[in-house]
Image (cartoon, rainbow, N blue to C red):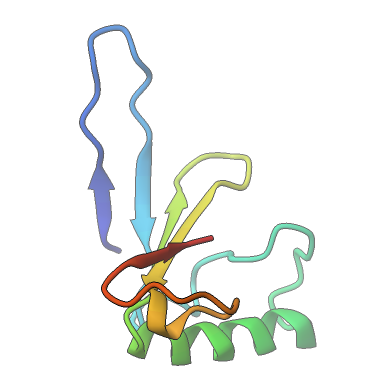
Amino acid sequence: MAEQNLPRRTGEIKMEFVTLTHDNIEQEHICCAIANEKDIQVVSKKNWLKERLDEGLVFLKGNVRGKCFIEYIPAEYAWAPVEAEGYMYID
């Protein structure tokens, strides 16, 4: 499991992030509202995410009890219509 520790300032709480990859996507919980990993919506989203990973998607999941996600992808692969060649699309 790939983890990233973001830099912190004195007195701030440290949060660990898990980077979603092809190797760990099946073991990681990625849906905010659905707990059943076999639900068709979860399976569909994971399949969609696998395709986006190949396009450069970075999906960071906070390693915390609540749901905390950070997603970004090269803008030319964004799933929203944007013109931003050379930039990242942050969701």
